[in-house]
Length: 145
Image (cartoon, rainbow, N blue to C red):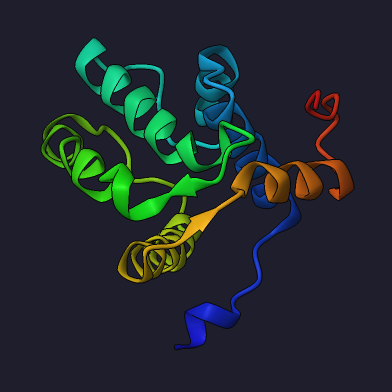
């Protein structure tokens, strides 16, 4: 799978990492600002789409939200995420950034593997290390840990 070896532009990585951090911290303001900046959203979405975008983001952020190890199997995270699919199909006004297709395929595979093997992982520590050591070059203040 050549997508697994794909590199992403620095600007995309900076923005996407900010979105992951916002999701982990249930920071709706930053999530929506960065989602607009990165063209996940146009600014013309209806409330149904905005709520689904927020809730799916916060659900994806759950593994990183707590210092406690995250139980991927017990969380039923894939079932809860799938609830938003029909909303995205009906109400999305723009496709997400091109890079998202391969990245989300990788992330879905990692999540599914963790579910399959019953992984319980302290994800927050890993995310904090990544954010702490990442060199943000987007002109914004680094996220507060």
